[in-house]
Length: 122
Image (cartoon, rainbow, N blue to C red; front, side, top):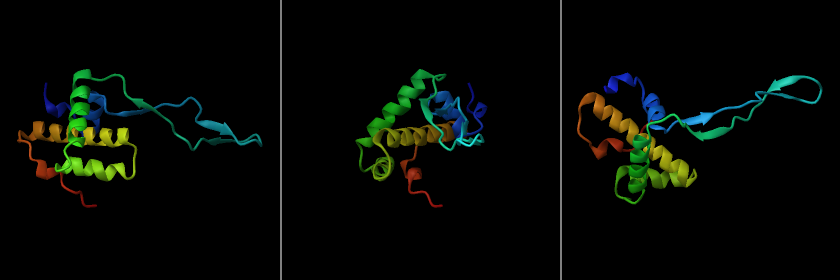
């Protein structure tokens, strides 16, 4: 298996079971006057089911351990995420960041460096 089969981190997230699935059966709703308009609400259905279960468990378990390490850069990012999101979504975000880091290290043959998880600038 080669890491180059995953062009982006999102493809690796999907393979690992960390991608969010959105499905709907009613994209159009009636506005009451007989006209149809596109529905504005998009509902998520959870994480994808076609996954590699071992990878999903590894990344979710690692994210859970990171939450217990307040001195780690990802532990600090988790604490910041808790101010704005639910704990389960914050852990998913940390698991995705770990998966993206693993994919990058795998592609480039690098060792893990926690300093690369520093604050992102936009």
